[in-house]
Amino acid sequence: MPRPHRFRDVIRVGPVQVGTRNDARGREKHTAACTAPGCGFSADYHDRSAAELAARTHRCT
Picture 1: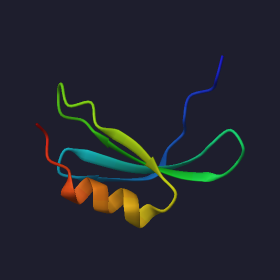
Picture 2 (picture 1 turned 135 degrees about the vertical axis):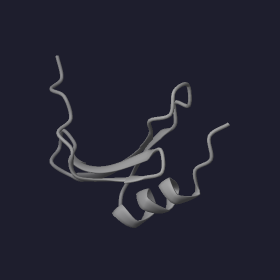
Picture 3 (picture 1 turned 90 degrees about the horizontal axis):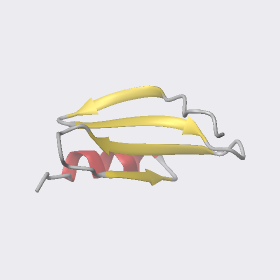
């Protein structure tokens, strides 16, 4: 059973949260995830600026 992700340096941009974590191989990943009910948007990025850009430009449908 995989261990849960431990996010650090979490910020919130509107309904989207951006956090940094290490993957199973020790590489740093940045995740943007929308917390609005029924949205379901989330994505992993290689750099923090891309995750923050996705958070700023995300629009829930």
